[in-house]
Image (cartoon, rainbow, N blue to C red; front, side):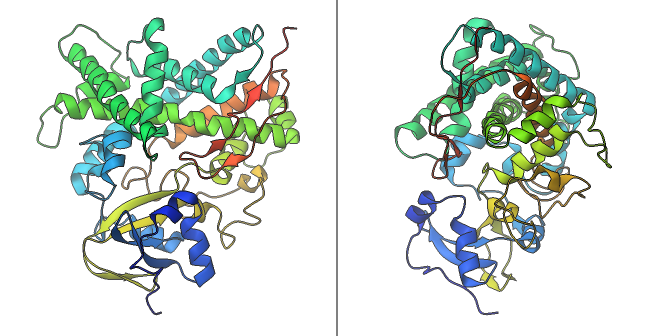
Length: 423
């Protein structure tokens, strides 16, 4: 197959920003290929889609993550020195730290803490008029994950920490003032997390040994050395920040419950331990959570650099070339998903896991590759909050609930507004 080009002499950054989630898939389908060359951020770049490309992309003998993400993303979303920029044995060693935090009982504890925060918030909503669920979800997740992770958080400080953690993911892909606010938030959050690490190491605070704060503070590199305070702070934030970012999925869950009321009724009717008549025992809320992750936009793309010259899906790629893998396009590929633009949670009933065909939070094996290890948390929190919302009596006033696909991350334009009657 001849190499495909998207006019590589012309920079397509503006086109990417206009349609970040569908930029790659639309061009690939128009050209009948899984890969094309273009120029983004003034750099020659190859864009790829499909499970076959994803499998090669995740092979660390072919691709490296070091220096792959644009500097503006590293300086805001990921932080310098974090696990996202590591390769090989160093990456696998650091990744085990995060995998160790995902034991089922610990994930269930975080879900329970989030449910408790939801119940407290819902009581307060009765005395208010307009409630923007996306804003409420960010606050409740900040409080829940800090308690779960062993990070001290006084009530008076919760709003500020919520704003900082939100800015790390909500402003990373922006341009202008919002991006610079994200940079300032990164510096402040790094100082906060580093202070937590220092206080743990000096014995001033003593979180339980099964918490993220304890595990990160005492994690040692392959040579047996403690992480320096800055790197430990970045990794602690790599637990807190992605959990708060699940608020995006929760806003989409509220959006889906409103537009698919039969699923709200089905989720409200179950007891949380499995759905009656479901042959594989999966609860309705879990099926719903997986479809929220597939159907709605979250991460559009991930980046890597080629370790050597190669040909991938018919496209020549030179050593050191940046390559972008299309996540949203894979999750909406009609060759992989029947009626991909339809919201159908039942598609996950009896479904077998496909690490390269279902990639809402990265591709591959989370223990070996750069797939997010926090997927069990995302599924558990979406399911837990969806159950609470499905059983809550509320009204949905007139609003613009269209999904803004130009925004990074995408969201319903209104943030999903509800009103909870006082009685």
